Image (tube, rainbow, N blue to C red; front, side, top):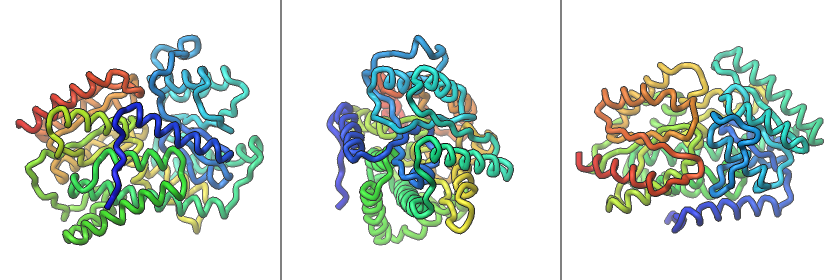
Length: 409
């Protein structure tokens, strides 16, 4: 039986994250903080550092006004405030992305100026996804590796790289299976637990967190095998990994509406928590999110693993650039085509659009998404939120109203 671990309060959820970070610090292992979901985790592990994903922190007093422009995203503001108030774990370095959005790139520049004792790294991502982009990103990764060796004194170790590739590939395979099992039958496993498992691994990749998510995937495999749904599940998983939904996939109709969440670098676990509260308030406990297109769940896990038989930096570049549906990559028409296919083949009834404060890359696509949802008769709701989920009552009320309208329809 799979054990559930839903906290009673949002504060308990945040406290659990703090405990995980404290355990990392107590282990006295080198930590490299990262922000953007498509960071080269294998590279950090190959240099014998633990990558740690930096999340927004509730109840952090503002500290950005003296250094950041007013149009900086709420995520950037929160991270800067954490550092100013010394609420961050002790990091050997912190990696900022370039080429993804102006806000995070500017944050890295300001960080370097305001906190000169911090080791600030940058990895610039190409906006295209072709052979030239792979070559460019591979050289960026190679330069980053050399920089880590010179600045932090730890060289790239091939044996550690191979172990890291295996660790992360196994995590992604398990996460992919759980995601697809939930598409086939959303009630088979709570969305909150799925989001928690992924968040826990990304916060600090380890064998312990891998074991937890693999045990869930194995349990779901056995359940779907009993129902003779395993071939369909695997076909859909391999299809999504290749960027499409196979024609032979047929989702069974149910009495419960099928709900999808879309957005960018949104805290999936936090959204799931407030979704569960909203459905409880609406007395709709049986409702579950069937699918999401968020950066820290689907877009991060449905990427190809590096091939160990070829150049590590080229393979890591290809893996990173295989991330699906990213708004920071070129090709809006292709993303809308995929979304249309999702609506049709996965039988989506309701769409929750998470709009994180001032996150332009994803919000620019909202009008096209709404238009497509209307064409496909998918009921949609726009949910403005900040990374701290500061206005929780309004957020849960908005979702609750949407769920009540959706089920009534």
